[in-house]
Amino acid sequence: MAKAGGKRSITPSRSPSSAETRAALVTGAVAALREEGFAGASAREIARRAGCHQSLIFYHFGSVAKLHLAALDAVSAARHARYQAMVDESENLGDLARAARAVFDEDLDQGHVTVLVEMIAAAQFTPELRPEVAARIRPWRAFAADSVREALAGSPAARLLPPEEVAHAVVALYLGLEMLANLEGDRAPALALFDRAGKVASLLDIFTRGRKT
Amino acid sequence: MAKAGGKRSITPSRSPSSAETRAALVTGAVAALREEGFAGASAREIARRAGCHQSLIFYHFGSVAKLHLAALDAVSAARHARYQAMVDESENLGDLARAARAVFDEDLDQGHVTVLVEMIAAAQFTPELRPEVAARIRPWRAFAADSVREALAGSPAARLLPPEEVAHAVVALYLGLEMLANLEGDRAPALALFDRAGKVASLLDIFTRGRKT
DNA sequence: GATCGGATTGAGCAACTGCTCAAAGCGTAG
DNA sequence: CTACGCTTTGAGCAGTTGCTCAATCCGATC
Image 1 (cartoon, each protein chain N blue to C red):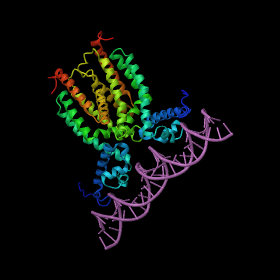
Image 2: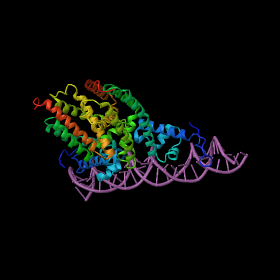
Image 3: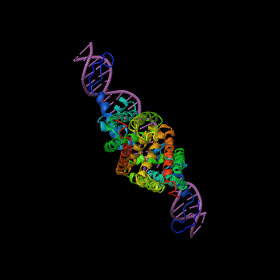
Image 4: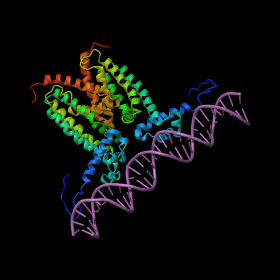
């Protein structure tokens, strides 16, 4: 995209299609992880989706594992913006629950959480992958904790429910719900749960009204 | 084990070591799934752990996938007894939460839930495996629903929390917590959550006291 | 036009996979 | 002791995997 006319003696500039190839490979990796799972996201499969030769994966990323991590980063970045907006636009717990339901629906449609789950499941038994994946999941817990802390501020439930603990539960629940929904091919139970959470949240909002925002 | 002296003309009796070999293979499959994950639970790896030739897997089970399912069944059966006892011995929600914490600890130690998670994650992208695994997870949801229904009987929270929805959340949460605990190599956040649930449950027990048992 | 260097390709290797099949082992019935 | 049949084995096949490496392409520099 951006054609930077850089230094000429050493690496005179990025060759034209380098960045584009990298991007195509990451996109292909995300698609492969989402549609074929970790086991199906092989170098050749990713390259096929990216429309290039599989050797490029090792040239640009060094190994398929590193490309997998890059795909995880890409998905994380893409979803972070969406989650942040969801939290920012919610003025009370009821809003948040309703927004979360919509976002969960999106995540299931686009298979983004599937990429997370596949990478987490695979990382358990891949020693050199586990710390990398763990480091990429941890920020989600921190983000959730911040969101919960903000959302619960002034609520009578705040004392009984520490944000860190709730956040941990929320992340675990989100992953688990996604697994069950994909396994059964039925997201209705999960959506019903979000609706239920909305009702409980609205109840809490009544007690909280006037304290915040 | 049981030497049945059956019909002699056709399949005169089960040959001595047939049942034992099957059992050894199932045990090996469970161990392989737990310690090496789904990707590592190959025919040769399972056979190595069972101390026999890999061809026996195909002779006795027809395919590795069917052995994987048999391993899933074995784990399910083994845990069902434990969960049932946990529910039976709990007289109120506080008891149940405390028992659940202990059982979660056991599950993590013995890696039983890991087998579940691995099979679920793999089944997502293995068309012929998905319905089989789904059919084996569904009973857990039903069991959880029954337990929640019984535990919540007479509680003021019962109206706000339908057993089926709570059960779905509990199963999803259990799977998610196990994934996060294994990923981080730290079960403390999950255990803290069980403790928190115990406190909330004891609070509910106060309102319920005298209505049940 | 010649040269240079990063980007790209094709071919191939060693290891692994699920699975098949003919041959062998071996306890039991006759 | 022989013969039968379930059980077990060894060898092997076709396919896939991650990855390497020499050879090429191609745009930018001289």
